[in-house]
Image (cartoon, rainbow, N blue to C red; front, side, top):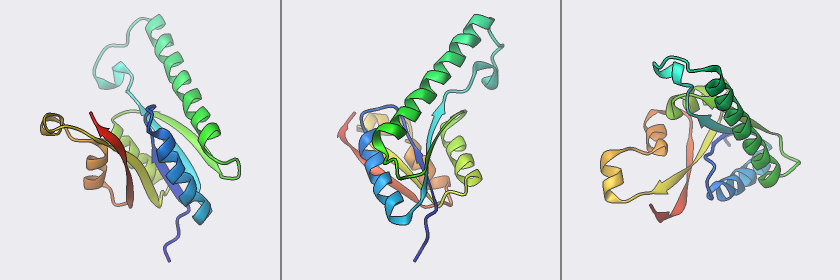
Length: 150
């Protein structure tokens, strides 16, 4: 039987997060695994080729990241059992690359993400994070579908 010690869950702050964390909690309890709740925030502008702006802009961005981390921690507290070992991580960068990098560094045995159902034209012009992870990951990936077409 395959052991699962570390589960990395990539989340957005949308309405589907509760469903995603319910699946995660069930698996973590079964395998006595640690949960790493990960949100990838947009990179700071100077990471993507722009000049750093005035200090007040940087301060606003820093406060935005602190708020996102508080939201992430609140998700852990709200949806996951206190008996589970869970940590909230907020990192910046390109979503797919950062998820894969963190999964490797944390020695994740399983990644869990949600999948959004999109219409034909959306799928024609862009690929989803879950599909990119599926293509690039060497770590097992569990996708949880989100109801509804966007």
